[in-house]
Image (cartoon, rainbow, N blue to C red; front, side, top):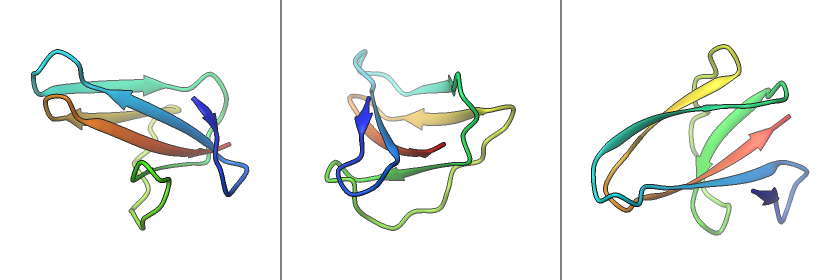
Length: 72
């Protein structure tokens, strides 16, 4: 987790390490207004993820790294 390079958003990186397909839910401790996936350089257009009860759900491939841009 870190501050985004080009905005006031927060970057959260998630990594699947068990060489399996996995689904996970991330719960945020503060109210978030938007969460979207971007590339490792924190760029790229993407649709915002659905936020439900201040949580987002991700499906991960084996060894996949997902970068989330979180707007609070």
